[in-house]
Image (cartoon, rainbow, N blue to C red; front, top):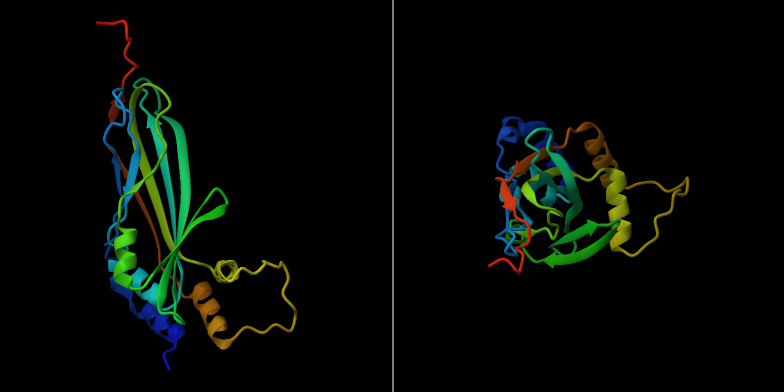
Length: 222
């Protein structure tokens, strides 16, 4: 019988130099102008997530991945520090379900789950994770702007995994568990790996070139 915790234990303690191969990229770009003033929206793309053995192997061995995105709008101030005008954050939770042999993706922002999608293959999930994501925030004024983005990738902690399992099963999240509730051997091994195994963590950053937002044109001007 396949034992995911044993396979991941091998991954944790034998991957060594493999972890230094940075295959994941965070691409932050500005969209095409959406009006004559040159207003743009930020776009992010993260190619290579499931090409990296760290994340692919962890996911296939039933360790959910947590992708935490943050996009910021910055206004350039030539004589002072640039000003952070607005920021938007969201999370993408990716999980493998061995019983159905499917992958799931849950998008969370504003404190609640906003989208839930199933995928029948790793390749299908990979294509979805690598598509361009348009963030519907825009500069509020005029002047010179740029966008920055950051991404944190890690496996869920044991407590987060239990919360996710309850959420997906539609169960409440009680604060206390009965004293006689004993975890399975697999869950115990998973907890030890999460605590002592040094599971991977990665943080990426990116930014766009500067662009100009002009004042609205006066209709009376010829």
